[in-house]
Image 1 (spheres, rainbow, N blue to C red):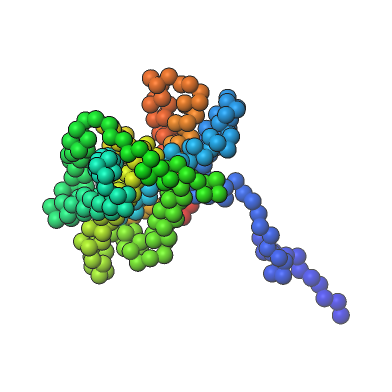
Image 2: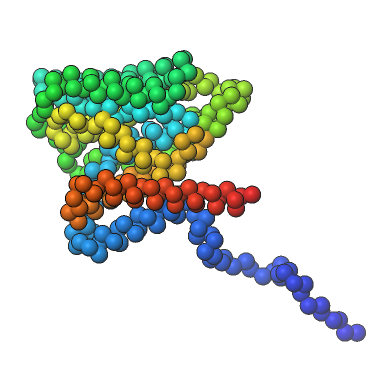
Length: 339
């Protein structure tokens, strides 16, 4: 008796056949930060073709050293914005920290005392922001912008509107390397990694996502929202202090205009184009790191190409706008794919 075999039904594969991974353009488009990475690659390739000095080891290390301060501020801002907060005074906190640190060192205080004093001061500034935002219900943007204006004035008063040099104090942090990697870059990487781990694996990080998603629901679920928000603002203050000390060591002093609004805008831009939601509920340290690198690469490229300072702001703004649009398009595609 013969047995007839029926042909396979359309679309039904042999259950014993081993699944083979397949590459598809759609899968590539769905990868995280595709738009941001694409813009970064275009800028790198275009600049490398125009100047031979861009892709050298020395220049790459120089870029990463220069963006280290922004990276530390942006890491704290990523966590805070994920929780639905905003601190627009971090750059001004850096200005005060560098000014106070420079004056302490210039007047003979030890490096250890200066570091502790600067970090405590910066943390208290962040905590004050948290108290105002949490207990008065003033919008975070408004409260911290007012604080930023106040702190810029304080920094000028501390410096008496003149530059203050610290000589060779803290020289190692700002200039030395370990295995060819600048200390400043090591500090920035450690801060970024620590922030990513906190956001991914700790209750504190999960609470930040919950608060940013819906603060009312977070309260009902048992999260101490007030304590968490105060902790987050204090943390951003502490990281501002760390960034200020890093900047002080790199510049070997402080002067009017150090830190402030320009530094703050770089950090905000890096976080936003990296994909962290302004409304809260979503944040990514990897995206922030890519945004920081993009800012550094664009600034360095414009300098190497000797672009007039009159056009640099226009060029940087254009690149940031393109990166932000590309990132939003990617997130929109991801949401539609999820549905």
